[in-house]
Image (tube, rainbow over all chains, first blue to last red):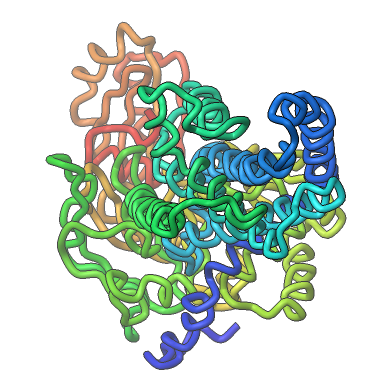
Length: 276
Length: 308
């Protein structure tokens, strides 16, 4: 160690900060993914078991009933699968963007440790998003493979759903992130998000039946629900569902807009909370 | 003094109307071991966070290694090692992995970081716990791991906020030994403490802080010379009588401090003062002559005890 004598030059100091400034977000993601390894087996098993069980139950079970009553045509499984894959992405997002925030700020306050190193608030947000995507994307990909095995993905471009599902998950995650990151004390808010946010969204987003089947008074839930937009987008790719092109564009823009706004807000919340 | 590595002028941090740090000024020279001594809530940790470039100052000037934390936070932090008051190790990772992920934050390449981690585990006497879970470590071990983590980037300045609070005496001594080695190697140490023995052990120079302001500054020995006498005689007459007896001991010693449980009599020669008390016909329940400490300095400066 050579600290005693001369101070480092300004250039040397700036140079030392360059890698953290450039790659800090990736370092955060790397850290987070390393922690996921501890429960990797659970993650992998659920990512295979989940789609298999759902597609089997809904396709072979409910699907046979629906298909019989609707007189065939489009298989029910091809209709419901885009909703399920998007929901699977949303479920993972619901895990990655809730408790890990509380952990990082309070129970296992690694965000403060990162920030004491050269990592900035916005890089922590980015890193958490990247790490969440590192779970969401494979989850959606595995889901898609099992969809194919079940014959639930008829279109040639159905694979695009892996991306639209991930985008849906990200949109939901980034909408809740500014809120979960601002919680100082857990008084059950996280469980509330699951119970009164994510679960109803699953039920009222045109998942099992078209949104138009709902009473008009309840349809707005679908319109604001990222899951509905993501599901509809998925259906367009999965079996060429017919809808006006502008509506497809709206689905996409809506999801991207939620991501952008949530991301911005999350950065602000993190910066405020770390700078005490 | 050579060019300062830390230079603060009228440094202030306000939370709404409350000034946690109220216009303090100090400089730290390279290789120096500098302490902030004061009771809880004096503003020490807030000062440390500002120096650590994670908390924005409300006003005043602050320069770390010639850079302003307001615009070069990451650059400054890449030169610092930080040991916070509360350990914030990642409990989800194992001991060695904690060092590895942390090293990455400084941009240390993957192939170099493993070697560095092993070296630090050796230094922290944790080599045999490399694969342990953080939760399974004792308080002293966690503290040593936090210090090892803070050294992962070979910092020019090591910031230690209450490094040994909550540790048993043996763990404290191990830690002091490690810090002393760093000091010998030329690392600049800045530490806060409310333990005067720690300040005396580790600091070349310190400031006494109370209510966000600096009360005095100097080496431990100089502060004791300036604000206290060589020796202190502690006598106890029982909590209901201390006050009453103290009034009658005027003229004995240079100065008295009456605490709820004892009377402190400051003098160059404690035994001689005790003899005078006996000669005057008073019989303390217990008596003790000791060297003056920073605790006495603090008491003199603020009228209050460091640990309340």
